[in-house]
Image (cartoon, protein in one colour):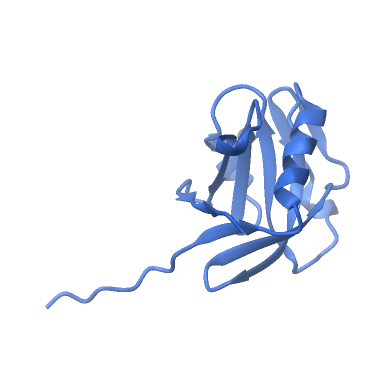
Length: 132
Ligand SMILES: [Zn+2]
């Protein structure tokens, strides 16, 4: 007899035009990377992005984007982060996975069109992004 454990279907949903906000911020910062914290909530595996926060003391350049997470005021509404890859793919680098923050990491690659945005979990598995 085979017992199947039901896997939680995870997905990301953008609310309040946060998706447009991310894309605009990517374009403004190009050719540097950009980084933003995702605010929202998660329910039964669905992660709702409701707002964006610019992390304090963030540092970005053409190939890196980061922030000292110890400088971050505690907020239980943080569900993850998003950063851009002005060059290359929207797949997480080893460094991205080592600096994982929250439940989901979204990466947007240039030229920051609809297909250029991918979501990942801390193990580097992709999470589907659903239309609202
Ligand atoms: Zn990266």
